[in-house]
Image 1 (cartoon, rainbow, N blue to C red):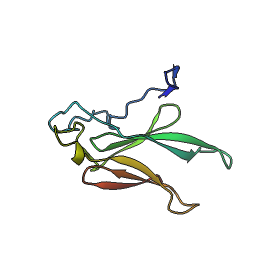
Image 2: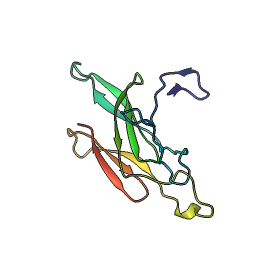
Image 3: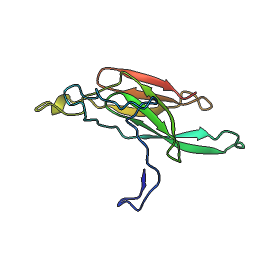
Length: 132
């Protein structure tokens, strides 16, 4: 992550395309195995462990076209990642612009005091992710 545009400084650097076991995502776009696309990341408020009431940090949640969702904390450390079926083709087929999927990550707050959920939309699948 960087600060500002144009970039002034690097805040942290982390891989969002690597599973916890260390293997890189290789089957992202079936015909173009080394090409990945991303959606706009989410900022998710998380209560800091051991902090007083109101003590929270913001995590960044990313999704790549292979369906991999990754949460990174404010220092660049990976919190978790999840391999989902919410995939989409990273490259548009020629002449198919009107039929392109619109993948996204959305933060849902079912109740005011409830735990937020993440809705991940791919081309054919939707995944609901609990943060607890």
